[in-house]
Image 1 (cartoon, helix red, strand yellow):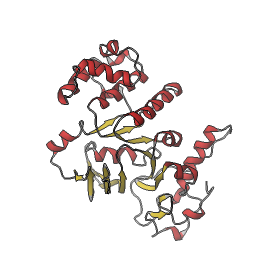
Image 2 (cartoon, helix red, strand yellow):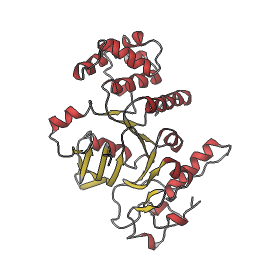
Image 3 (cartoon, helix red, strand yellow):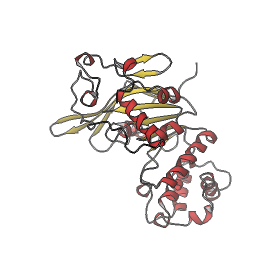
Image 4 (tube, helix red, strand yellow):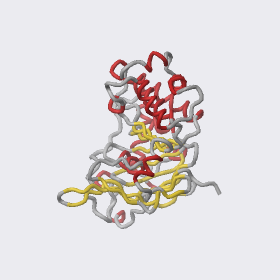
Length: 325
């Protein structure tokens, strides 16, 4: 039996506040196989980024994570001592943040960053700078040597994002979390970055968790998709099945909007309301305030359940929720 690269069981994240605990992610469970891409999608506030940061122990101050287990290559890394986990993160586990500017020291050249990473994770055969230039070529930077001598402010947002991707790939991690890497880029550059990820997924021996709020992007880059809402997984399954036949009303709304964006409609379908806060009633569907199908029967029946040849859905009306939104 093949061991998944990553296996998460019942991951929970909360923040300690003066008035008590604020849960932001609840009972998140999934697996990711080697060489695959998992799309993690949802609106802002759905918990997708904070869940991924919890896996890599990058929660901000006040954040706390618990899980039944977090297995990487079959080894439970949830209880590793901090120093041991730090050796894993950055070498085997890495993250591409959505703001490339904030990921670079503004007074150091791009080449300085590669030298720093290269000293921490040696292994190249042509010298650090030669290997760095090759890494930049792999992300389609035409003049790597000149780029290595530049400072972050001398590069465009798209160029700097490519440099960040190359820098993360430089240490050859096995698992890479990409947190909305096309945010704040214009449409043309966004398309180029997505094409680059599509290229990397075919050429690089790594697994990706690709965080996005755009179903169209998730469809292109992912082998499977997890849809999160209000800190919970509401639907997950193979990309083709989920995009062809979304079952949860929230997923249907996201897919419908994505299809309309590809078409020629003047007005997009809107999912009314907003994602709520972490103060959710314990036994009530969190999507209830926005769901046209909600009734009392939905409460106390909010567990994920398996749908044959599809995946898992957190909705008891999954088989009759077509075109709900």
